[in-house]
Length: 378
Image (tube, rainbow, N blue to C red; front, side, top):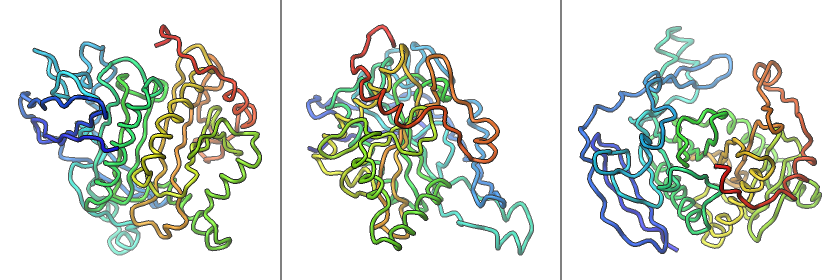
């Protein structure tokens, strides 16, 4: 299967890509006739000496669009007299450069650890760098209402192909060290636009969480000769107690040491480093199992559940490719119908999580959760 792609640029020079479903007719790509506005010059990276982490400062994001009504949604198709970010009358899946990026638009390399420069100069400039990188928006549908869970397998497959395309292209760009594909759903998570969409961050450094997990994966590989995620997958499949569902190519389970009230990992049975490594059969399978998992999560309560869906792909220049294993983590702070888990003292200050429900309890509930959607819920 080959998803068709059309490329263009918006009035201010940002790139836009339209991905078409397999059965979708080719439509002309309209031009963005909005007045060209200057793009943000980019933010700044500041290095935290205590943690060894880069922190992005992007003050221009304070003016970004916040929860617009449907008639003013910038992710809906353009209409006469109402141009949007997507200059077409209809579309399937669209990817474009974020108008308010946390990183970019300039690309370049960033020093992994500038402590030596700081020791020599002891100045602020030694701990700062341009916020190089790229931020993109991935719009799942031209319909303003709905979610990824509502996508049919054909549309979900188009989104997966878009993720794969962007992973490959962004990883090859100057200075990019990690490509992070994710979706935030729900205002409780911090979503500023309700139109179904996700995002992609192409970092000029390896994200802090990945630094930790990759180091453990490399250590495990050296000590056992096996990939760590492969052993985790075998452990969960053998137990079965926390398994939510399995397909030909993927397993979905609540991890043994789940931190969040709702947490599901979707892991491919074959070791791959990124979404772009999945073959056609795996992508088709993922297009079925992923929305089903989300529908089960939505089936737990009478209203849609907020979540973060995060693709953990291998760093571009990973230390040991044989140690890495891509997977998806879906997490939600919702611990009851009208209760959320907040990161308070232990979690926020110390990074030491305290679980509110057991992994086994959550998995059992998800196994029997209804898959039916009630139209009036959204």
